[in-house]
Image: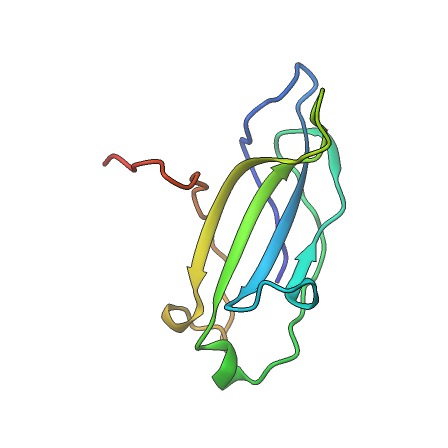
Length: 114
């Protein structure tokens, strides 16, 4: 899996210092957590990072991938702020073939309007 973002929220006039965090659900342990390095001062980061999970194809098709894009630099706080997230149900995707797709990020609790 390769990760890129475009048109992220600008946290300063220089852009955003962002990174991506993944959980291979249902496991939320540190073992199943992956993250990219921070890309500084951009709203269109290309992380160029490959993620691999050591499971069978059958097991992967029963899981979900929780992907969150976070701001890596918060003024007055040590916490990272969520820019947005997407939850991919791998049973609905042809992961054996592979996919290239853009997904819209949302925040938990936000209603989506058509």
